[in-house]
Length: 189
Length: 421
Image 1 (tube, rainbow over the protein chains, first blue to last red):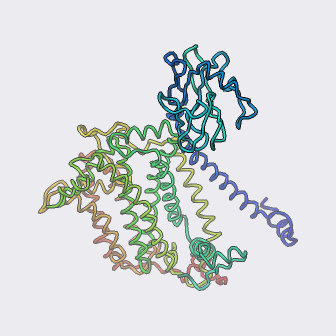
Image 2 (image 1 turned 90 degrees about the horizontal axis):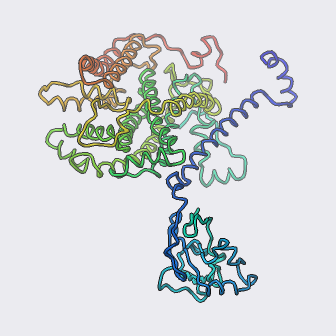
Image 3 (image 1 turned 90 degrees about the vertical axis):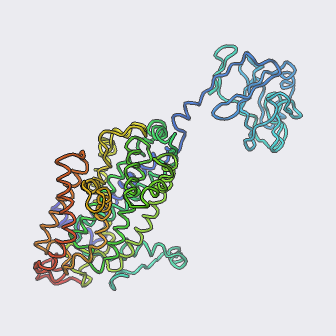
């Protein structure tokens, strides 16, 4: 290198072509520093994501044995309400009687429950419009004109399968990931 | 504000011209740390530490704001929230180690910056204001560092808070009520922790403000240089960018290597294991010392052991504060017209002695309060004040400095060189 800098480079420079040694060093140095600086952004941004103690609460076990047909409970899953509802035969029949194509977010009750457990409707208690908690899970709360849930904030009404039927909400109540451990115990998340 | 040959900012792109008319921020940057700021061509690596100190301030503010997102300033929660940061928060350990070691590196950089000033006479006219503002920054930095160390609410935090606020108790008449007022109680507790957190968050921004004044005041006469000879012509200077941005960039690289070495491989080596024990108001750790960067001043505090007119405790406190306040008078204590220690044969030796004295004080400050350290601290404290109050004024009067180069250019290129224009 040392021998070529004295001879070859000025000729190339005069002709105005090729990459100068100095340009190369400058671009390489600034790029290396820039990539390093970008790398430091990873921890600076990642620290705001849920911490390990928050993630440790990401699954919840629920005992279903005390919930009678027609009853529902509000559990807590990831610091948000979770509706666990034991549907009656009439409610199941009402949900199955609806033409799926006519729905805003077409889904059957079977798609929203687990096989063999289609009386257990497990959904988030979070309205898909703007996140309020719909009424209808606790005793004495109004269930709306479709017998499921009714969100008092902006008037979204859900049916007995937790599907949106009327009002501004765009989607059915979200069904979280869950599985049956036994017939009366589920793990959500 | 600058030399007449300083390059002028001439935006070419229409957007930059528009911005320059409405909000000339790029112009400010250009004139402050860009090609528009002419700097002596002979700066050595001791001139890197101003930029490094600025980097440390940014580093501490960024990591500090992040820590504040996860920290709970409550006596019942503080300690466990720090452990939460260490164990649960994503990269929390890195943020905390970066902040704790960042404080140490900040002080290291600042001490080198200050001693650069001592040796090269950076405090002399026309840069007295730069120096005075610098001492203010150092005092703010000490207050910030101390309050930050209290926040984890471990044993050293608690007893540090107790001892340092106890200093104010030494003041006659108002001392005790003042200490109680500072703490918001009779001992450090929730009230003290909360106000320390509030002030620890505030002061860095005050420091940033004074740093702006510090740089503003510096840019009026321009940077000093290792010869101490003022800039005479254009050939004495080079533009800050790209020359010193590149040199500072290299210095920053070296700094970051050393810093990362500490953060990733020796993160607790400058801390005290006792601070991983939750604060206990009923039991003092056997060997209580501040962080290393306070050791010299801690040694001065402890050097006074006998009452002499005033109580020993008060003497210690006065001496400790005086040891920094004396820096404010430095521009008027050292009257030598020659700035740089390179051309001052006697001063050079006394500067070396001061460095040694500070190191001795530091070593004693970190050692237990027992003999021989107490006696050594006393001698070193006496010499410290002797240096500033007696030796410097006398040396500046009697010393015969070496001949100065005619100009910076001559110092760099030799006497026969024709100054380039």
